[in-house]
Length: 394
Ligand code: PMP
Image (cartoon, rainbow, N blue to C red; front, side, top):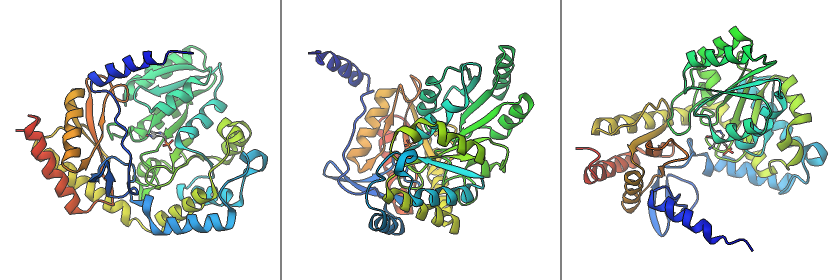
């Protein structure tokens, strides 16, 4: 038998460095407030941007979905698992995103695995922002394409890498970027990326996991935000954040989506979304299409919270979205801050290496439309108190 005790030493080392991930169990549903470890705490770390995790209309739609379609899809979609409900979701999602077609898979993580592999091979090049999400990195690793990593958001460096890929004889060049960078909340310079792609004949793919339901009109995402409809070849999205569910999708031209249905491995070899999730996702798309009220509340909350923290003297990095990093740099300090917040009734995760680079530890505060002004004021007062106590602010 393998001696798994050797892993314990590694865990101890992580703990000493303040890098051990503390996994807490929720004793109540995802909402603005949670019961965790017997304590009532304000939830400041979920991706439930619009509060849809616990939305009555979505819950009802999921119940109706189960009543009509049962609980499981029965097979992978290409064999006998595509329900009419999946097709309906894909049609409505395509309308919402203003694209020809979409393909829904089990998660945003899988959506990246589904699309990257089929469109490049060893004759091709992938150009990836250095801070792209782990699911993109893994998707890239599964291909034989040559990799070119460009400096974060640095379009001049992207151009250098495009030139190098071209000089190396690449057949296709695929530029991949996060839309919203998930740990910093900053935006990809998508208009400039599109410009370079047009100049060099490259394909553009954006992973808009944190932009869906957040950016653009009614939360249509980063392409809508920058008015780039028809100029970005591939959009990857998730249903697991603002949509309040679980699932992922690819949006683009019908020819791409038809091809992925023949080639995408998570589509071909793993069962699909359940009827409950699919029906609730349709309800979420309809909800967002019909009103932008929740998106506006989210942005008002985010601007209010960020302004207050900044005026207290906190470093909130370069965020342009509701993701609010509170930069503490030192992993141990960040971990202690998170611990003290929890004791004071605030659930906010400390993020360290390898999720963010070494020496860039932070609290990652996730603002939601579900937060009331009173909730935000409560959080701000606790940040002020603990910030002074730990010498982070004066
Ligand atoms: N892409 C990005 C940029 C993300 O932040 C995430 C979630 N952490 C994902 C993909 C994965 O999405 P999901 O949780 O739906 O698998």
